[in-house]
Length: 286
Image (tube, rainbow, N blue to C red; front, side, top):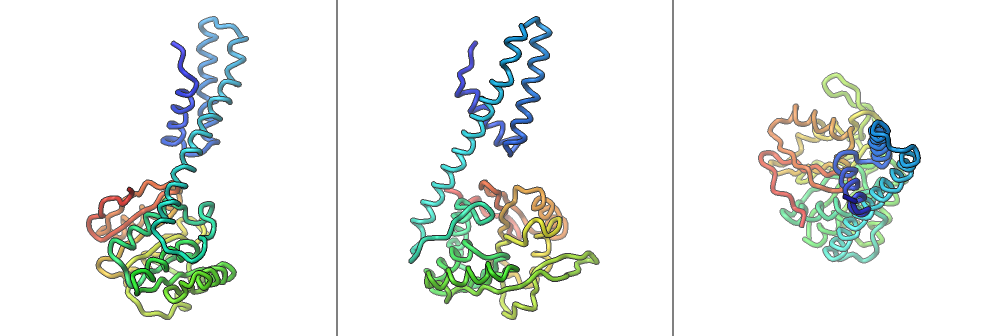
């Protein structure tokens, strides 16, 4: 039976998305798969001409699978961007999203959590598009402030300028907090200088989107042990990029050390973790 080419591409695309996650791994797996097929076919006496065509077929089908998967991801992000645009009353366009920034699908879920139970004090580890989204919601509700800790002075300045341009600076405070030495249970960490943040507040929502993954293994781990004492009983914690190995290691440590917390994976492109004390609410994706 001849299997339609589109079915092959879609099937490999689903395989790529569910089990492999990167184009390089998909190509490698496809190559191994078809190399095994060549060995089997030769064992049955299939001619070398047919076997020689398999690498080209592999390349074409796997490339189609990767393109299919990427198109699906782009579509989901465009859809999320439209939801964001309809949900916000912004005076200027948003800065670029994705790449190392918050993706639209994660931004849409952040906005939904902010609206579910409007917070007074939001803390962000890292600043950027998420700061603008949060300040916009706080301005809409008429009260509240987002405090964004940022280790990069230039990024902090750009974010402040963007907030002023969009008339959101009354609900946001971007704090330049360089990475300094912290010691947690005898282990050394490079994390934000909390001495630069003098506001004595209780945290209703925490978004963890820093420090950069290259600073050290499990770089985002210190967020909970260093800020936990400031959490309100109903505090919600979100961590972006939760599909990365580093963030899964962070989650494993948080689960061991903060066993009263429950965590849920929101199905975004980069992964978004939502944590609450007790039972996590049902997912907010629409």
